[in-house]
Amino acid sequence: MKTLTKYVEDRNAWRGIFGQAPFTFPLTQADVTELTEIIDSELSPENLCCDGELPMAQVRVKARLLNGAAADLAKYATENGFTQPETYCI
Image 1 (cartoon, helix red, strand yellow):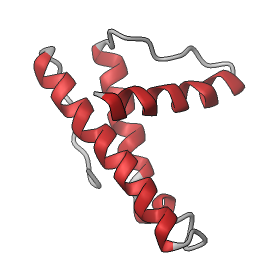
Image 2 (cartoon, helix red, strand yellow; image 1 turned 90 degrees about the vertical axis):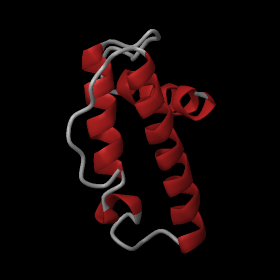
Image 3 (cartoon, rainbow, N blue to C red; image 1 turned 120 degrees about the vertical axis):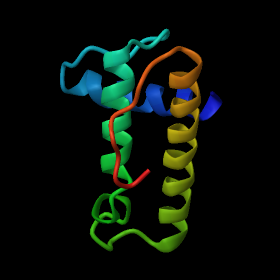
Image 4 (cartoon, helix red, strand yellow; image 1 turned 30 degrees about the horizontal axis):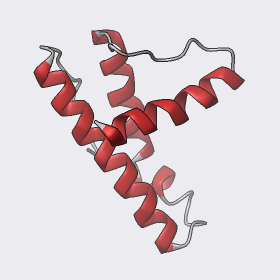
């Protein structure tokens, strides 16, 4: 859950810049759905590698964080009776 918490904190910083409401724990079904979709999108090859601009060391770090957050989110969803949408990259 540590990785998910860090991911949500980082995501909330960006949401604040754009005037969006932050994610708060405990998460709702809507939060789980949105976070799953965001993580899935960030794991797409184009986004993960920043269109080939990131060095592989940074890609590995980014992938580790995103995959860890995805695993924590899946566990959180299961433990709280939430469902996750279909994903393509997770």
